[in-house]
Image (cartoon, rainbow, N blue to C red; front, side, top):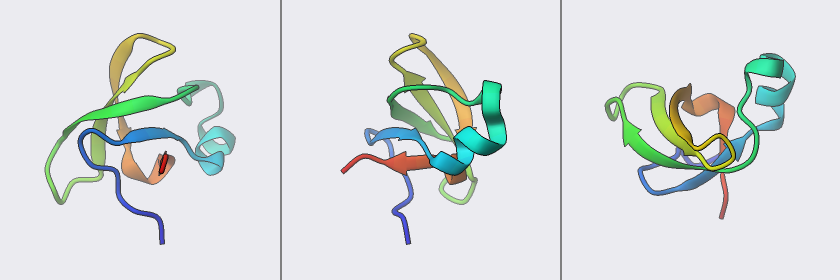
Length: 65
């Protein structure tokens, strides 16, 4: 089981995100900046390539170890 992203984690979109979200999927790496809540599935990620923060579901992210 993959670990859930937490604030400060370096993340990237998973392979399934790239396949399912296609052109809506962010590219590159990002840093989790905010959790909507501990039980919610949505986090805010600052995407370095785009230079902005966008919400995304945790299920589409992989934590970079």
